[in-house]
Image (cartoon, rainbow, N blue to C red):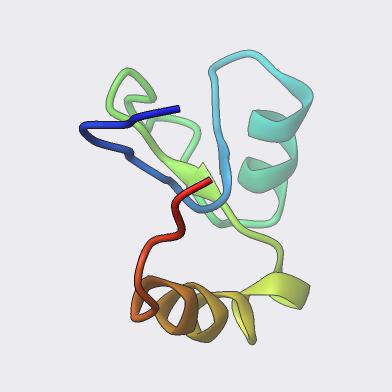
Length: 66
């Protein structure tokens, strides 16, 4: 498959009125008044410690052609 572009996001997008939105509000990560029409993402603390470094490592490698 040939790709002209690829956009990767990290974390789960938080949508209004969802269990995830209620959880992050309860944990104080976002305000109940936050406008979630503008993307906000949740990343577990278990991933936050190692995922950014892993993504940077992979991003520095040349693309594969399969």
